[in-house]
Length: 289
Image 1 (cartoon, rainbow, N blue to C red):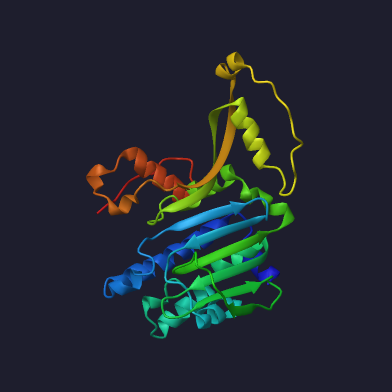
Image 2 (image 1 turned 30 degrees about the vertical axis):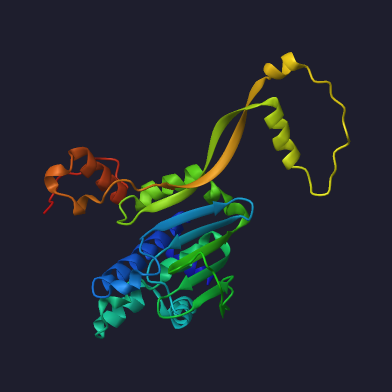
């Protein structure tokens, strides 16, 4: 497994591009199905890709609201690398299979093991229960039914990162990778980020917040305080920092191929060209129709 993975990919950072691309394919498929059957969107009407880093547990989670996978899909598409990937997809097409295979995980999924020592996949398909797939890339895997109320439809991939790959939990690193490889994905990609803001409180309020942090069962010793009315009126105020987490949209630019050519600037064409080619120079010409 390790040999195959590292043969396909020498640049470890592309794992995120591959997984986001899989999410986009899965979303394309459910959107296509919804054109003829709107009921498939009942469980989750929104299309999204969310990326959640967790430094405490050293995990990176990618969640999408795409088509999801049944138990059989998990075994067939994730269970055996020999049955997955672009080669298998092209062979099937040449034998008469239809394009509905889009969204299946392939070699791109296995790029996750470039940075992860263990991968956990939870998926919910509209035609099946929710299942969890786990593997440490050692040639074996497990699949079991599970309950995950947060996943109404789609797939959640959790990467347990290797010790030397913790950089992929850093906000700046993830933002750069999304911009570099996935800025023009046609679905919203959001990254969970920490937001710090200052809040002005009185000394009493600050003290009260400290008390709430004490362990349960810990009792305060009784204190006798003299109340100075003048001092009470002139309570000092201080600023404390509050840290919260929220999802922040990363790909705010609408894909240029979906826009009217008259509305796309030369700078936008240049940015798009450099994003997909990794070229430092501007493009030579444009053909947009």
